[in-house]
Length: 163
Ligand SMILES: *[C@@H]1O[C@H](CO)[C@@H](O)[C@H](O)[C@H]1NC(C)=O
Ligand SMILES: *[C@@H]1O[C@H](CO)[C@@H](O)[C@H](O)[C@H]1NC(C)=O
Image 1 (tube, helix red, strand yellow):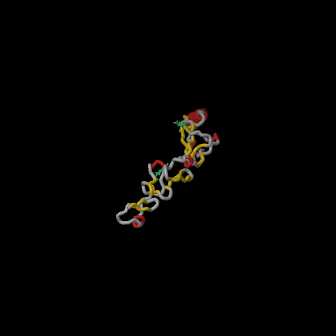
Image 2: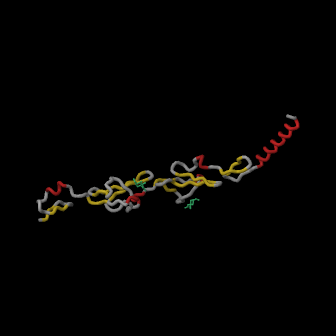
Image 3: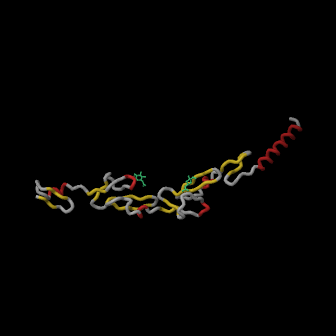
């Protein structure tokens, strides 16, 4: 290889380097070769444990996970806003579980149970509002029937007989 050729190559490389250094990118983008590509801000997990990070071109935003809500009432936020996602107390809505049911809040969620003397229409002990379950009176137990005469009608709540 001739010395002249090596010199030429050296100058070419130096110029390439210069051009790379000259590429400047807008915030949220980084240099890749001769161009700018989007930086994935979510890689640094800026949103915390109770929020999801969504990367966008040149930026990102956070959203609280299901069952959590921001303390500034915003849906979308960034780490710079100092927003915290707190557990939603779903039970504050008195009617969420429907009639004859009680509500229990839990972190990130909640569940409903039927009041004593009632059973859930889907037969499960716990349910939630999205399952359209209703609480029905516990069906008469066979023991209750025994207290009535064979040809009498037996009524549940307070066991009494109709002749
Ligand atoms: C949150 O951001 C997404 C994506 O930009 C947008 O579609 C949505 O409307 C925003 N929601 C609110 C309430 O600003
Ligand atoms: C309600 O319960 C169903 C079944 O367990 C579950 O798949 C669903 O995520 C629950 N929804 C809420 C809002 O908790």
